[in-house]
Image 1 (tube, rainbow, N blue to C red):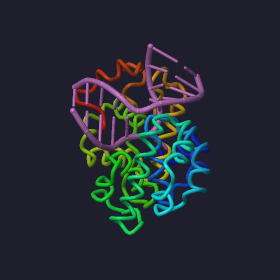
Image 2 (image 1 turned 30 degrees about the vertical axis):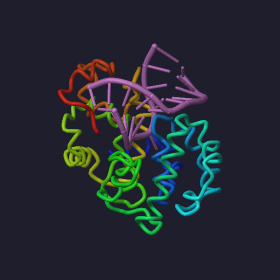
Image 3 (image 1 turned 60 degrees about the horizontal axis):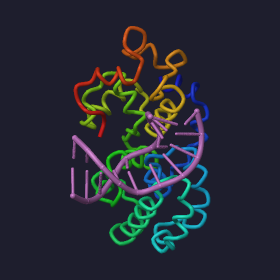
Length: 218
DNA sequence: ATCCCGAGGG
DNA sequence: CCCTCTGGAT
């Protein structure tokens, strides 16, 4: 299945430059409620100006707001990256911690963001459980999403190679290119044969949500 | 109108 | 549980 996704989303590899933990962390934080295209457009200038936690912690708020403007929520995001950088400097010696417990204690970092950093920057078990993945999970009827261990087990069964870095990005691209919120491209979906919502099941995302008994992934 | 690689606060 | 933060693409 890893191979199928790699062939289906060849461009996902090009987007993979999240081995720098700080960049990975900041990019994920500012990605909230925004599209990856705008994040990718804004990121080079952001990290050219402020490549480290120390530099970003000392950045003028006005300049950050200008850089983050096109993303939306720019005041909240400026606040987030400033507080995040300051916490990294003050509490973690300017380094991004590689443990889930430490990551979620950082201001503005929740479980989704922490898992992205673990999976992408550190190569540890941690998948990108974003809204894209939420749709996929609902379609597959995974109702234990709130238990991250269950989610990881389910995904590991689907992707036995467990290349967490590529998996995270393939799931993102799968959400972007196939498993849309509205009008999903089920006909071109590489997971169609495995998806309970394909064919007999409802393909409309609103109908598919009725399949679950609990909330989506946290 | 709806949604996007969410988190914090009430 | 609810709400707010925000702008651009479709």
